[in-house]
Amino acid sequence: MQKRLGILTSGGDCPGLNAVIRAVVSHATLTYNWQVVGIPYATRGLLERKAIPLSIHGLDLRGIDPLLNMGGTILGSINKGDTLAHVEEIVAGYHALELDALIGIGGDGSLAILNQLQKQGNWNFVAIPKTIDCDVSSTEKVIGFDTAVNTIVDALNRLTFTAASHDRVMIVEVMGRTAGHLALQSGIAGGADAILIPEISYTIQGVCEHLAELRDRWGRRFAIIVVAEGVQIAADSSQKPSSQKPSCGIGQYIADELCSCTNHQIDIRVSVLGHIQRGGIPSASDRLIATAFGKAAVDLLANGQSAQMVAWQNGQVIAVPLETVLASSPCLVNPNHFLVQTARALGIYVGEESILFG
Ligand code: F6P
Image (cartoon, rainbow, N blue to C red; front, top):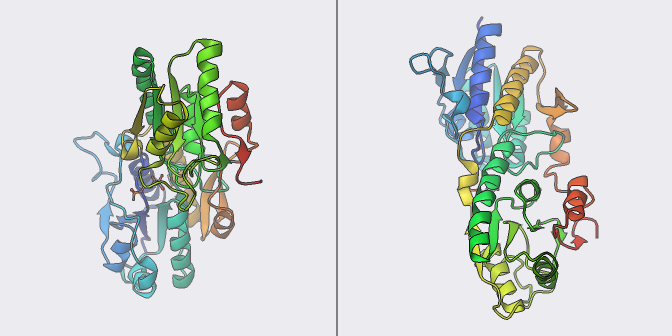
């Protein structure tokens, strides 16, 4: 009998999700002759027992295949809710929809929930990692990160010209609630002068001294500072750390502190890139990762494997048990990572002390 494969996207969207859906539908249909159905809005679709038939011929527009380069997810997604309050109904939904297997695309939070569900429901389940935060462990690549880095780098390029024209300090707040991969990598690639990430503490004095050095030693009258949204208030802050997250947003907080520290001698502007980082056309790299992951996930299920996540390691796509992945996620920036050292070697201020390892 023809097998029925479900696919869902869970958590915050990112570029490349539709490219995975395309790869899964094509490979499952062409190679294994399976029927593929999309589950709308992640586990909510299972709860409501909704499934949308997906076929390779139904995904194109007059022969043009839009999914490879379309941002977002045609299946819709959710990143909040009380999923775990409905475990039994969701588990039952999988069986009521007569699914033989399910592919779930998500970040570490979604994968943890899906893992609980698949264990309880005894599902045939394979996970595909996606996240612009790049904090799912056990894999060197995830879907969405490369495009987000490119989007930030593009913004930094633009901001550099306007900053230089007005002798300004530009603070650019980027996503990354717990992990600083996005800030670190885009900051290096985009030519930032300072990069602040949640894993490494910093001081306002340290940033001020760095700005002064840029000006006095190198004649630089502008600067670009990249700040991850999850950065806490500075170690030497005048504000007492009753709350470690300022209500005005970390970018604005740093701007205000730098203004006070320099007696308002610098002209500062703050740009919060927000959800611009999650939108857009997936980069070639994200399309490639999505396609390779989609194909590999289908093959794993065809080979009778379950409770695995596809992962990119040493130039290959392999399977890692979901439990192993979740035990070490979220994966944070190691303050001794060669990219942190690379940034420092190039004179970029990346904070002073490791929060992670003391
Ligand atoms: O986890 C991915 C992420 O983009 C984070 O970087 C960000 O903090 C969060 O999602 C934003 O979520 P929401 O879409 O609910 O605002």
